[in-house]
Length: 193
View 1 (cartoon, rainbow, N blue to C red):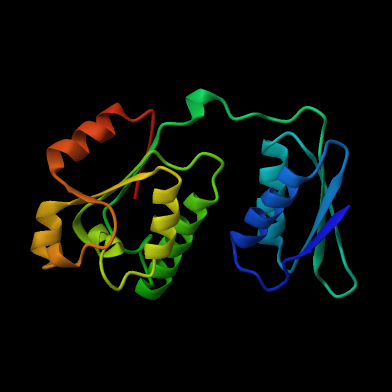
View 2 (cartoon, rainbow, N blue to C red; view 1 turned 30 degrees about the horizontal axis):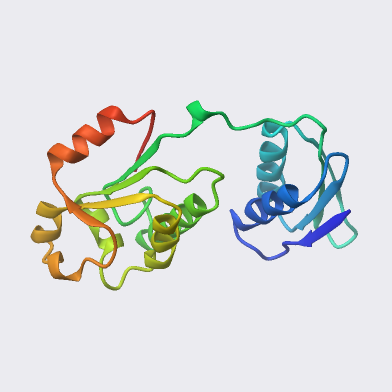
């Protein structure tokens, strides 16, 4: 059995590390993950049951949670119709409320895309989202990792020009709204941020 200590690690790190351990394990083997909050436990449970594995947990003496995933012989396989993902990002932060939290969440979201079994086919950036593909962005390393996996990264040229960022584009290519609309229309699955 493999045990991973994820105490103090923010979401989605415990799920990502558990998924890596599951990939390295064999059917019947168990992977235990030590976490310090119930949200992480819930996310681990959703991931495990979604893949068809058994899940159980218990509280430890120091108020942490030990989650155990036991690999089933038959697990869920991702089919071809689950690929073809296009992600459209129109802001450099995620959600409303705290701008600082929103920027952290967007960085975490882009990092999470790098850990998917099948990364997005295309990332499209427009309006404030183009700040993520330009000089000074904290997401450039994650975007480079996605590009290495074959993800196409495109930023709206009019948007880059509007923000004075045309010469500061660091990753991907320049596109236009017609091409963005066409890519969105042909996507098998679409996430619009």
